Structures are given as C-alpha cells and as structure tokens.
Length: 314
Image (tube, rainbow, N blue to C red; front, side, top):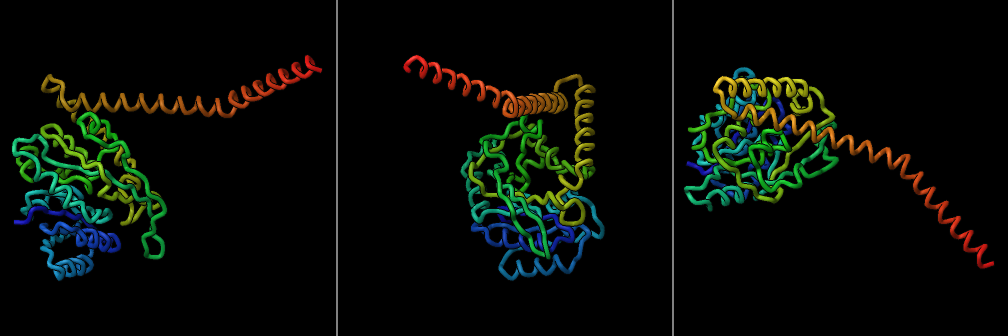
C-alpha cells in the first residue's frame, strides 16, 4: 500500500493533463499511486500519459468512464479504486511545488495519533493564464489567500477564500465518518465536503506556497474553462440551494447547526462587502472632489500667509 492516493479528474484536456503529469512525476516524495479518472473523454490521450508515468516507475490506476459522470463521481471512483493512507485531489489543470507531498505527509506523520487534525492545507499561488495556439501562457501570479494561517468552520461557511482541492491532503479514514463526495452536486462539491470535514475535524496549515491554483478567466466555454468562471450562474444557484437545504435540516431537527452557520456567515459577509464598497466609494469621492478642494484651500491659505508676511516685513 502506498502512503498517498493522488486523484486526478480529467476530460479532453491533454494540455492540462500533460502538465499535471509533470507535477506528479516531479514530486520528491515517491510513495504514492496516481489515479487518473477519465470522465468520458478521449481514452488514447489519457492512456498515453498513463503509460509514460508507468515507464517512470509510478503506480498508475486508470479509470475510464463511458460517459461524463461529473467531478464528484470521478473523485469517489478514484478513492474507491485506491488504498493510500492519505488522499489528495490533483485536478488536471492545477500543479504542485516538488516538495508538496514531502511537506504535507511529513506534517501529518508528525502528529500524535489522538490529534484532532486529520488534514493539512498549504498556501497557494493563484496563476492567471490563457491558451493561445495550443500553448498555456501565464500572464500574472498572485496570492490565493495571503493571510491564510488557519482554517475554521466559520471561514469555510462564508466561502472566504477556501483552500482549493490541490492544496488539501487528508487521512482516508475520515471518510468512514463523513462519507464521500456528493455526486448530485455539479459544482461546490468540494466546499460541501469541506464543511462536513470541519464539522468533525481540524485542518493544519503549512504557511508556504506549495500548490498552484490555475485560473483562465478569459475562457468562458469549452473544455479548458474553469467552472467557477464558465458556470458562474450554476455556482450561484447551487449555493442558494445548499444554503436552503442546510437551514431546512436545522429547522427539522430544532437545533442550530451548519444551516444557521452557513446562512448567517453569508449574510455577515454581504454586510462586510457592502461596507467595504461604501468605504471605497467614499474614498474615491474624497480623492476626486474633497481631496483636491482641501489641497487648493490649504495652498491658498499658505499663499495668503506668505503675502501677509511679505507686506509686514516690507
């Protein structure tokens, strides 16, 4: 049995899968198995990369879906087909620093057996890119969450820059308690899973950027888009549906639970965002109107002072 099961979900994105292959192969920590779940895409393209990985001594498990079953079903099939002590989702369009597995596994293995921490995340680079002429081009890099030093249930509830799957390694045995990913969700399945995770366990944080989340904001359709960009409306409607589902569950049981937390956290976040934008508008008004006016007044006052001083001494 390998220490880590790496689950890669892919469909008709050979450029991305090639890059993911390099990310996996270049890991300094080698005690892993790579599970490639081809969700109804071209079989030959996936097998070609799987064969190359095997030629480098990597244990590869291939799963080919006859048709597209979705991201969460692909995650679950990959998990069921593997047996690593730890699980991590490495989507085909994201990448790791070569030390990612070494550092995250080392962190988890250093914990006492009774620890409430059952998973770990690292800081993340946000890579802004596009595809031109069959090539992936990076045009900007930023911090995904520069202030990440802890992950709490309340932060997760308000969708406050939640760590992407590429940065999250967790113990397989937690699945016995919280279950697998929800296959009925087309999007936000990782968020819903994370809420269940934090409902029982804690997450450790490595404050170094060892994972890369790649986003292509300019690609709004086709295989190479990001769902958070190309399916924004679906994200919004799914979020509303989940909030209602969670709150109804609380009402049915007559207790405060994740439904209350998620909905209240969302409302507070909207209030915070509203005050943020009001402050920004005020600052812009000040900068464009009051600011220059005050500067003119001060300059005129200074000029009068100089003139009076000149008249007094002349």
